[in-house]
Image 1: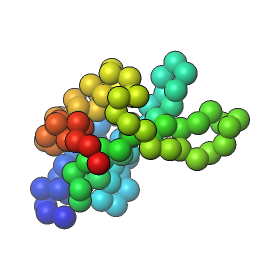
Image 2 (image 1 turned 90 degrees about the vertical axis):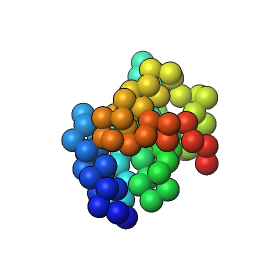
Image 3 (image 1 turned 60 degrees about the horizontal axis):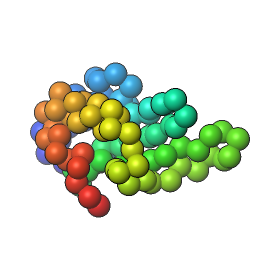
Length: 95
């Protein structure tokens, strides 16, 4: 990873709720009824959304498509990326 990638991850880590794990950064979001884990992977410059099941249904999160993620959450992720000097269009990239 370049020094620029290190700076981007450090900047994300400074954003509210974000934590860093190696070459990735993660934030958790709880809406009215849904919980998500959102991960930014620096080596592939992409975002992956994971839906976290209610605790009574188990502990395995599953990746979900962007179209199923609430728009306000996606907008917040793009804002965080931009604030960390990461192109917010990364959030729209498909895997």
